[in-house]
Picture 1: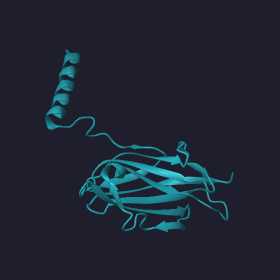
Picture 2 (picture 1 turned 180 degrees about the horizontal axis):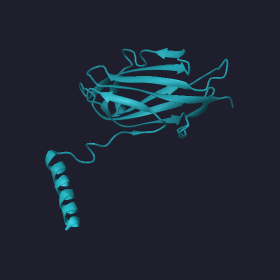
Picture 3 (picture 1 turned 90 degrees about the vertical axis):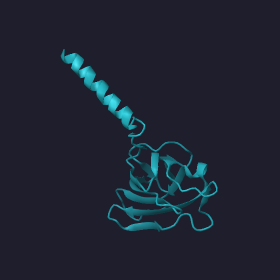
Picture 4 (picture 1 turned 60 degrees about the horizontal axis):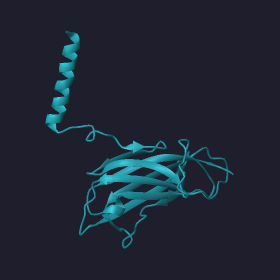
Amino acid sequence: MQKNKAIVICILIQMMFASTGYNQVAIKKPVLLNNISLTATGGFVVDSAYLLYEDFTEVKKENITFLNKKIIMWIVIKKGWTVNDGMVKVGASETILTNRNEVVLKQDELFPEGNDVASIDDARYISLKAVITEMKNEIPYFKVNFSVWDKNGSGKITGTYRLVVKNE
């Protein structure tokens, strides 16, 4: 009898989710690799975020790189852009800090006016590059803070990840 009650409860819960319109896709969280932490607001829905080297090989979860080796963070955005005539306006910024919060690079606008328009298909895949070109002394890690926003709407993604830079 207990087994039948459990089955009935499971069926009722499943029916409740089906009747409210919720399903596994609606509550799926984004796939965030490489210890990337991010928050999406204003209607943006992120599918995934991950790091690749410039040659498109994956960066292992420890996020180790070398001097002058570019790291590309990819953010795959499912939806949320405000579209005008099939185009969107992308804003992005990036700040690289040492483990002591000393600013190494600060770029407030990576897509200035005139270079900020993209098709909705292209804007689904946002890539931001980071590269450390020199280290005067041993730095255990760098912190990369980033933002991506919709210049035509309220969508915004903010986040961070760490890079460990080694000498080759």
